[in-house]
Length: 215
Image (cartoon, rainbow, N blue to C red; front, top):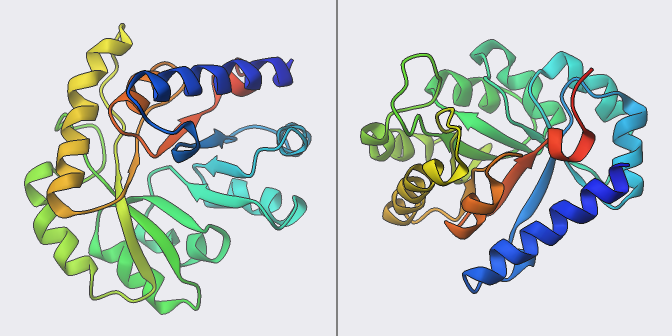
């Protein structure tokens, strides 16, 4: 049952945070709801969750319109520049900023968003995000766009078998974040969120561990 899965996730979050002297309340759990139905999201909402993550703008719109208005919607997928303005109409937070094209489109709209710069932390050619070496330049240019408030950094690390293998990548993101004085660190998913919390994650993105395996 989802209630039992959520209880287990929350217990693991608390244990991970307390193991490094962090307040568990400093970590936001984002329920990754992409491909999930509106009734599934409503069930998660009824259990107290208020942060949901979607990867496709068109898929998310019916959910945003159907579910309660006190939900904070996080866009966590690859964002095409031509969808960025529409994305900002429905999402409060965009985790995957990596081009000025996105920022320019958001600027044309009427909604302000919180944004995270996506870092391709392992410099994998098949993944989106900017390279760590480009962060200073991109972060500086992003400051000129008034409708996007840059809050921090996000990463999707490489596929690994052991969650501990993610620790160096999460630590690298945390160090990058500290170097540019950004606050939010969106990192860690169902398989490795405990390591991410120990390395300073402010937001973790959990889908399968909460909703169960996709059918």
